[in-house]
Image 1 (cartoon, rainbow, N blue to C red):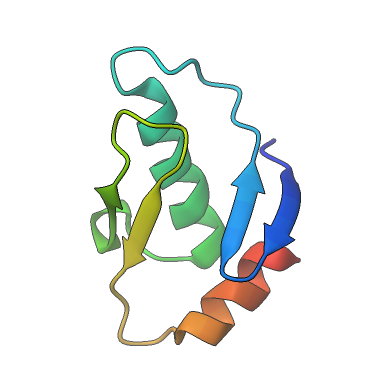
Image 2: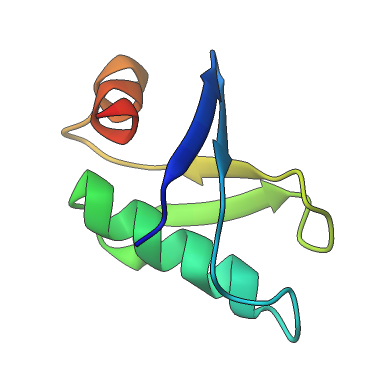
Length: 75
């Protein structure tokens, strides 16, 4: 389970169990976000912060607004 530790609009702080080695944490973030939002992993892109603890994830979805995505992730 990946708990949401803190939500500061528009920032979510997550604690991933995957280690930041060879992109495993990035993969875990995409997998978690995809599952929670109900979108395919291909709809998510880490646009900034591939090697940082701070990341910007772009969600491309015809069915989700940014507000809906935030509501889902904040549940």
